[in-house]
Image 1 (tube, rainbow, N blue to C red):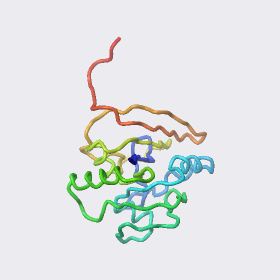
Image 2 (image 1 turned 45 degrees about the vertical axis):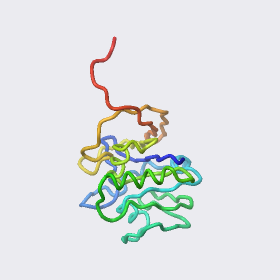
Image 3 (image 1 turned 180 degrees about the vertical axis):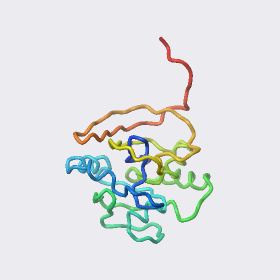
Length: 195
């Protein structure tokens, strides 16, 4: 059974938007914090082989096509906004039009039970929230950059159900970037702290 891993690069205030869409003025805000050693670490996190799960807009950015395509095999995929080359991948797109949550989650469930490498979602805050809501994400790796960006798309869409996570580890780079993988734990508990 494959794991679904979510890898998101965000600012200190939770902004994940990186493309110049909707008049967002900071298209490549993470670039100054990505020295070669940091780039190699991110590539290592992705691994030798993986299957990306992409929302339509993220797929369009990665492919540079501006067109919707399905089940495309790329020899080398790239993330232009991160300036990172990725290993050979097979893409599973979320599709081009809004789908009911049950269709999206059932498709992700089918992907999980297939043989193959782990599936990685990067980008798509809508799909991130859907996977978490339906308990389909096995890990959320948050790569936090030491910047504040203000109003823009954030890592989790409004309406993402509350829950707690278990911190797996933390790694800080000299540039101030922090990598923190988390595993979904249980529904959010509230109350006072014990003494």
